Length: 355
Image (tube, rainbow, N blue to C red; front, side, top):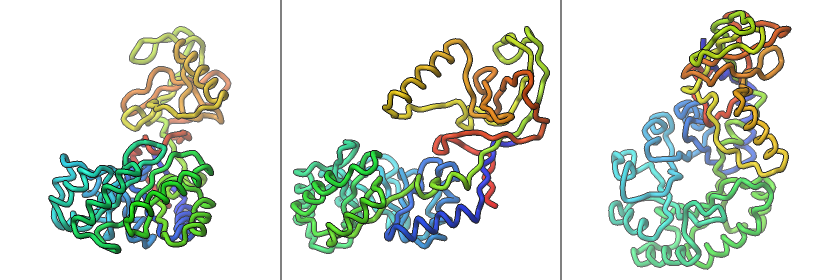
């Protein structure tokens, strides 16, 4: 009676090993809802892969992974002089690698903890966090004034968080690495996100004096979707005649068929969407079409029954959803499982079963 993620364990583990082997210096990203698997499970799996560092999204996520992974813990959210960043237990703080993107924060971090380890984030075309080129030089000056010398182990490198566009990053990365050299930081390590395998190979050749550490989340944990299956349980089946009343909102059935009650609702992330960011005419046309259906109360659900996505009978409930199944479709029995299409990073599963 659950929304369940079932994982083909052998296939998934084979994929994880292949990604790790293809990316020396891999830093698995373990953040948010753990890409649907849960932070604790991914932390243990990262330890199984034998990596020395994992990346979490926020300081609040550290306690859940720290007891399941013994290595370094890189926090992707930049350090700020407030909040959970200032509340780390000493034993945990020694394992943390902070991300710093402002000169005043670099000074503040070192004032609080002179032994803190950190990476300096260079602002990319994504324009989310990080130093500008002049800011990176200011940071280098500050470090020298604080007694840092080339090779100081507290400075763990420079971080580049790039946009998701694929195969178009090399000109920007070349420019950003020139900024790193010009700042005179003397660090050989660059932590990168969203570079393709071909780009990483090219950079390893063109910038052999740098070591690149790819931070990978989606392509690692979710890269082989064929190993993952999401299912919901059929909780109830009701015959509907035209005009029958159903649901919280006392709707009337427009035609005969069946009403299915299945596990999975808003508490799991079902029916909750965020902008996709797709810019093609086709994707925009699809958005307009879906919006038109929404306006007349006809919304396609992510649940597949008898080979087709079925319509919501009404908006999803907290832990269950009601679906309309038209006449002529094969009717599942209570206890049967139906497939569900989900966005893994926004879904909370009741059960995760790794075979």
